[in-house]
Length: 455
Image (cartoon, rainbow, N blue to C red):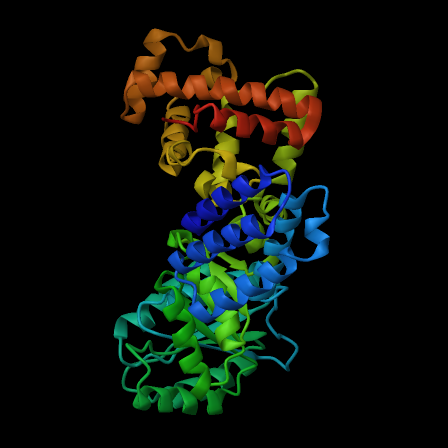
């Protein structure tokens, strides 16, 4: 996420941290580089100007010039201003209204709106323990109604049926009545995507808004459109009272211009960001955590929350006891770890959350592929139970059989066994010194170019 901007900012601050003291000249040079990095990231010019002026003014102040660690002081100022630019703190959904609380979703075509409805439903069901009903008021694209029905079944939301011969306002009114009858906590309304902001479509969504009286009106926008995302959100907000923005496809956005422009241009908070294609890939938008990632400092809080939600605590406790008793870490345990990592979105999704990963070369990070985890799991599934418990039994002939059973080569089994031994060593460190040692080991492995499963 936002890799290009992170790399540029990291290179800039690495240079200034190496300076013994800050001067007006090297602050100006740093701010020139920061300005270029932000413009290349497609941040709106007005936002870049305000950002660099505030940072420069504070950096030239006595608090930085007299600091024992001026580079760190400068970094803190930039971090604080990034947080302020993106909105200071996460603004959660207002679910305090009498149920059913209506959430209206708006956005351009192709922004990922229908998928976001499903993601938000899942988040509300799993984390907020809400009963959720969804309805599609998109009567222009029959596939949209079918898509939402399929996704609703996947995430466990109730689906209110609609058809293309109905009026959107009637659909919404009927859905509210049904949600009330079923005692649903939340009703999420998916609306038709627009190719651009046209009068006819905007008039329709105004009517829907009036009929629904939503507690939240969220604008779904593609992060990869850069500062255009902010301008489109502003145009919508001029005719529709938005309460927040959902930024989609941030996992594929190497720039970050939308995240840094939206709050300043629209005055509306980014409430969520989509970080992948799966229905669990939606995160609350925390400006402080995103700023930390942008500056290459990771996002330990989000990582811990992810682990808390996805790790099977009973299995983890059993594994910890097993290792402490000296019984060792076998291939079944390793497969469980890979499974749980995949549930958290895979290693690539975790990379920018691990503190210190910005120091790992990009060519090493690019070798990490979640497909390799799937291949490793397939190889372990091809083994007998005895082989998983006693890996030393796996000789040449067994390796051939395991490879054939998984439709792979003996070299793949060899790589798996090498990676498993590295994981065994890491687990021994965890049993002796906890998670901090494991993280250091993880960074060390990547830093030495060992990479993850199959290089």
